[in-house]
Structures are given as structure tokens and as C-alpha cells.
Amino acid sequence: MSSKAPQAHEVTELGGTPEQEAYMRDIIDQFTVDTNYLNQIRDHFMAEMDKGLEKEGATLAMIPSFVEGRLTGKEEGHFLALDLGGTNLRVVLVTLEGQGKYKTVSSKSRVSEELKTGPMRNLCDYIAECVDTFLTEQGLEDQEVELNLGYTFSFPVLQSRINRGVLTTWTKGFACTGAVGKDPVLLLQDALLRKHVPVKVSALVNDTVGTLLSNAYNKPSTLAGLILGTGANGAYIEKFDKITKWKGSKASADEMIINMEFGAFDNERKILPLTRFDNKLDRESINPHAQLYEKMVSGMYLGEITRNVLTDMIDRELLLKRDENTSLAWSKEISRHWSFETAFMSNIEADNSTDYAHTKEILDTNLNLHDVTTTEARFIKKICELVGKRAARLAATSIAAIVKHCGIDADGCDIGIDGSLYEFYPSFEARMYEALTEMMPELTNIRKTIRLGLARDGSGVGAALTACVAARMEKIIA
Image (tube, rainbow, N blue to C red):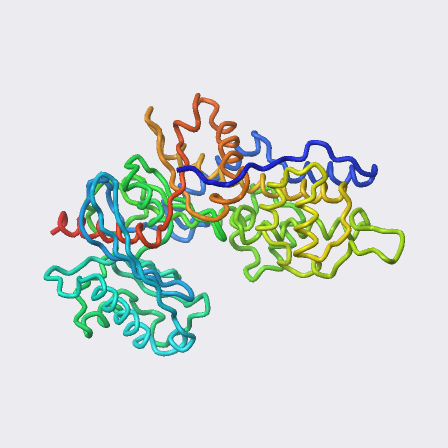
């Protein structure tokens, strides 16, 4: 299944004053990444992948996930997933039926502020209670065999086995005491034992690894899983003999999923086409000099890059300038950080009205820009297009790097992608394919060879599938 995003309607002619035209030509030049540049970025990406596989502490962390082997699509049974990472706690029962088919039932519970900041034991007891209640509702409370559970614990963890790790620090508003430096799996397992819940925490799961597996269950040729939404990351299947930094125990298979943590790609600023607008965003972000690639390709940041260009035009009196003092075009809203959302860009890019009526309406409704002219709306639309298109093209370099690094046979491969940008942003997928075609001219039919598709619910279905793989690995090694 491809993304279901609408088509982007691109601006072909600009119009405007000579000064506006000159400014726009410069902006187009800065945000355009040509084929030659794409290839250079891809090659640098591949070199950084090799460094990360070779040693710890590289910019691309290339973290072994401890998930070994591949799915066949024939796996069967009941598996649980638990997703803790924000305001809600989600418990999912995934019933694998073989032939790539599955059913899911889930429940959501709110995690109170008190639980987020109190003792870790209280949080684990609460989670165990939620799992217990859920199993009772599903009629599975008296299981004779323990159910395997995949735990998507969306916080920084140093993993040492598929079901072992140490919490390094809390993020996202959590600050439970007695957890940092401890293993979240053991803490949860203790709580489940205290409540006599027949569940074994079999796997600690990263959401990109889950995305890869949720795609692989019905598409066994899946090579990689990507998140292209608020943030950006990727995971792919690597041959064991290429993971030269591996110090772990004997493996149950000759392949392992690697969590790339590719949002940090090129933090050294060697290759990415950074503009002054990207530098401004980076400087003013909560994590300057970090996650540079993510800041150029993910949904959290694209609106702010666009706003930086628009405010620069306003400062130069090339946009929203009026001779009389009665202008309603100007508003304070556009001066606020993060006020121009990536969702506005999506809607503006999908606008195919001749006078840019939808674009004007979006600016009016959301930013109080009341009398934007058709020429100005056209410029604003063009800037959204430049930022959105660059993001898709840069995102494609990671896929090209993974595919080239791994090598693919005549059957090609599937790439599962989760995230709002890929799913909803106009023409994002088409623009990625365009870039892949340019980087891989040797492939005659890019869409048939590198099959991008929407992979939903890595933290639910993917986590349950990780628990399934963990149970299989345990049998092989035992």
C-alpha cells in the first residue's frame, strides 16, 4: 500500500517585481539538490554506515537491535505489545494467523503526571494492572503458557540483549525515580510476577525495528523500515559479518536488524546542503548541532524552515509590503517560532486553484494574514514546494544508501515506511521515487524494484512480531 497523500501542484511561473524574482531565483538555487549532489550525499551516507558498523561512538550509531533472522509470514500465535512513550499506555494483542495475516485488539490507558514523576515501582505496578485487566477482557487471564510481550519503551536505552537494556535518561516529561541506570524489562517483569500475570517480557523494541517487522510479515522481501513523520529514523537487515563491532554472543541467524539512528547523519556538516535558514533553525532549536539530517527531512521542522524564509522576505520588504498604513496583510503570528506548521505546507502544496484561494484561506485562518495578493500567495506556495521537495529528495538518499550497501537481487526489495510525512504530505513518495530514479539509473523500473509502502503500527504489531522473533531465537539457542 502506497501513501494516500494528494498530489502536489507545483508553481511553474513566478511573476512579481524584478527584486522579488531575483530573490526567488536565489532561494530556488539554494534549495535545489541536483542528481550529482544526491549521489555525493548517498556515498557519504554509505561511508558513515560503515564507520558505525565498525566502531562505537560514530555519528551514525548503527545500533544492533539483537533481533536476528527474518520473518517468513508463516508465524502463528498470540503475542502482546506494550507501547509506553507519551501520554498514553497502549496494550495490543496481536493474533498471527500465518500467510501474512493478523488480527489486533488493543486498549489505551492514560499515564497521569503523578505516575510519570513518582517512583518507578508505581508506574510498573500500574502497567501490570493494565495488562492484567486487558487479558481478563480478552479471556486470556488463565493462560497455562506465558504470553510473549514486545515492549516499545520509547526512551534512550543501552540495549545488551533482545530483552535486556539500561535506561540512560528520561525524556518526554517522564522523571520516575529509581529507573535511570536500571533495566526497564526487569522492573516491569517484577511487577507482572507480583500480580501473577502470565506474561513474559521477551523483547525491548525500537519503533523503526517494529516498522520493519510489521512490513515484513506480509512482505518477506522487506529490507528496511523507516519513520518519516515528526522525526526521522531507519532500520535495515544487515549481514552479521559486516557488523565488525559486534561483541555479543553467538547468533541464532546470519543476519540482524540494525537501528541506524540516522537523524544524526552529517552532524559534522560535511555534505548536507545547509542554508542560512537551516542554520537559524538549528541554532534556535533545543538541540543545536544535533540531528541535522532529521531537521532537514522531518515534519517537526519543515514548517519552521519555511517560516524562516518567509520572515526573511518580509524583512527585505519583498513580501506583505504595503504603501498605506491600513494593511491587513501583516500579522504578528508569523513572527512566532513554530507558528507556520508543516500541516499548512501540506494543504498549500495540494492547492490547485488558479488564484491560490486555498493558500490565501490557510494564511488568513491560521496566521491572520488577511489580504495576501495572488502573487504573494504564489511565492509562499513556491517556498513550501522547495522545502517539501528537498526533504523528500534528501530522505531518498538514505534508502539509496541502504539498498546500495546491501545489494539487491533481481526480485528487488520492499521498504516499509511509517509516519505522517510519508503518508499525508502531497507527492512526498513521488518525489522520493524521482530522486531514487536519478541515483539508480541502472534500475529500469524503480517502483517495481524498490517497493516503498506504508507500514503501520511498528510500536504495536511490530513489537508483537519482535516478541515472536525473540521466542524463536530462544528456542534455537536453547
